[in-house]
Each structure stands twice: as structure tokens, then as C-alpha cells.
Image (cartoon, rainbow, N blue to C red; front, side, top):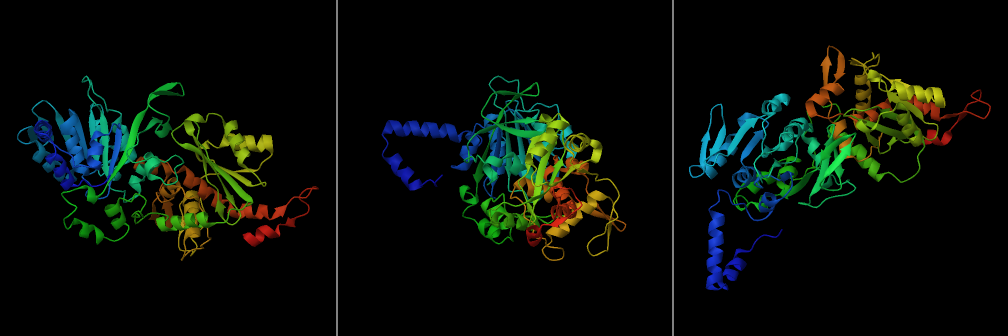
Length: 523
């Protein structure tokens, strides 16, 4: 939206008749009498958006907090405004008091932390410091929720509370506003997935800013649907909710755009500069100090994939992370000669009921007599594995993350607490462009895969490395690392797959071994 030229507006007003000018003054007076008047441009568009769940902002200074407070004053009755830490609420509360006191109500602090409007409306301010703090607000119906700096929240916190977005007031609109800059750590990566049509450049059906899209959430997994209405999944009915993303930048805020704030943002180091000045959700994330795989290493591997020649590559290994009937996903992926990884195939766990169906999906993708493996931790992979072995004579390996490891790091300094630590650390070493093997791995440029690979953290237990478990990751971020685990499994099977690939069984059996020279040249 182009900036409004006040000179043109003044000229237009001068040309109005006396009656039209009086009508305009009347309308302007009505608008100005409201407790909150949005800035022209994205803030007005956001206030008027019909989306049930709105992601607003991106760049710093776009008026996110003002929109959250103003929307409640304008359109809502029972509201909840949240920050990840309660100590960060001061600015929001102060702005709320500026807008509402004394003509529209009064803020009551202490244990209440509520703005009470004269008409009975209530706006509660709270923090969700701990992952489970959302439970303190569960069961309290709200027609308005705002998550300020939403990128600092966990996905589970946000979508769990959305379950209480409702109202018994006739004609009362209900909505959620997520005001946020781009996430600066792994915790907020879920925003890119939940608003993928707007934020993921690889999304097959991109959406324009402000465009409404509809989605249902089945067993914690978002599914984009054609439009509003009810959808049946697994015998249960789900009502679609609309979402949109409206970007806002410093230039859209007339109160800040001509101040020194721009110079402050321009002086920030990258990627913070791009995140806050331009609202770039895909700018480099701030890695956690105990993050297993640095983001830059994954980005380099994905860039190699983009630049790789489009040629047929022999499949060396196929692996699957098994899920049946739960919140996780069945993920199947393959690794090819030249350390090239295919794009991963995902199936919602709730849609996968039969181990034979899983085996069939793996068989459909397998070629070149590739090595086959499944995650056998917890026993979920035993069914597909048994079927492949007994009915197709395929030597399917079972990978158990919890089993003991006798391996050590490349430099020999540390051991590993279990197989999971060994596998993840060896994949880290393979991606390391300097201190490790630098195997020139090529990974598909998936935002999800990058987020998953850069999520796990590690610690040192004595002289052994321990990698954060999948269960602990789920508790921390509300999601699972299904695709990343498949990539790690494929790399774990690399040496065996390579040995198998460079030997071919002749018609008479395995008594004679024939080397595959072309593969060795590319390996």
C-alpha cells in the first residue's frame, strides 16, 4: 500500500461542498472519539482483517503492540494479552492505560493485572514463563487473545490456548493476533510452518499478504483445507479457522519512521538487522550455544542441493521414521550417490494405521536395490520391518536409538551415551565445513528440515556426549524431528549402503563380486 499524500487529501477536502464537508467532519469526529485509531496502511488492514488467526508485523516498529491493545478496545470484550515473560508486560500495560484511562476504564494491577472497562470488558495481562503455564488460563473462554512477540512462545502454548477462543455473547467476534518479529531462535520456528503459505518461499501454493487461508488442526498437525466449513477426519468433525499474515515495517508507523529508530536498526549486526529492519522471517537464526548442528552448516548443504545438476543418481539407502495413529508423522527419505538426499515424503500419523501400508509406501519409493532401515526405538517399526523381511526378502535394518554406542568423536576425545548421540554427532561432523569431514552433503531446501536439524541440543555427561531426546524436544517446542531423524538414519547407514552398492550379485548369486566403478568415482 502506497503512503498517503496529505496534500492530496487536503486538496480533495477543499473541493467538497459545505454539506459534504460537514458530513466528513461528522464521520471524522465519530472515528476520533473511539479509544484507538489505527495508522493508515497495514495496521488498519490488520484491524479490519476477518482472519480468525492473524500474524502481524515482521519488522520492528510496525505497531504490533498498539494493534493488539487497540483491537480489544475497538472490537472485543473478554481478552488476554500474553508475553513469554511476565516482566516484559510493562510497555503493553502502559500503552493500555494511555488508551483507556480515565474515559474508558481503569487498570487494576497487583495479582489481577486487568484493565476493566466501564462496559464490563476485561483485558487480562499475563506471562507464560514455563512451557506449561498456559494451563493456568485453560478453561477461561476469551473472545480475544494476543501473543506479543509470538516468536518467543512455544507452538503448544499458542495452539493449546486457542482451544478456549469462544464467546456466548451474541454477535461477538473472536480472534487471535500474533504480533511478532521473525523468531530469533529455534523455539519460534513453528511460525514459518503454521504460516507457510506466506512465509515459506518453497510452499507450493503461496498466499498474498492479507489473503485468507483456512486450516484445521488434527492431532496437533495443521492441515490446509479449501475454505470455511466443517471437515471430517477419522470420524471426528473439525471446523476450519482462517489465517493470514500482514507484514508491517517501520515506514508504516508515522510515529517512528522519521525518528532515530531507523539508524538504531541499521546499526544492528546481521541477521538481526534484516530481521528487525526488513521483517525477514528467513534471515539467519540465532543458534543456541548447545545446538548440535549450526544453522549455517545446514544452509550450506541446502545451497549445494539447489546448485546440484539435475541428473539421475543411484539410490543407496532408504529409511523411515515410523508413526501410526499418533501426532507424529511417518517420514520416508532416501540418500543417493554423491551424498545427495531426496525430498522427504510425509504422511500424517493419524492416517497411518497398518504396518503393511507403511511397507508398501517404502517399496514404492525404493529403487536400485537400496539399503533399507527403520527406526525400531519403541517397537513401532517392528511391523513394517517384519513384513519387508518375511514377505519381500529385504534385509531391513532396525535402528534403536537407546542402545549402547562404542564409537567416539572424530578426534577421539569423547564417547557417546547412546546410539542416538553417536548418529547425530557423526552427522554434525559430516556437515562441518572446517573441523570435520566436510562430506559435501546435499540436503533438500526445506524450511522444516532446517528447523528440525537445528533444534536438538547436546550436553556432556562425564566424557560422553548426550543428545536431547525426542520426548524432551516435543516438550520444549511442541513438535517432533521426524525428517531430521530420517536424514540422520540415512547417514548412519551410509557405510553399509556404500559397501552394498559397490558390489552386484550376478545371476548365479553372491559367489562373484563385481565392483561398480562408476559409483566409486562419484562416492
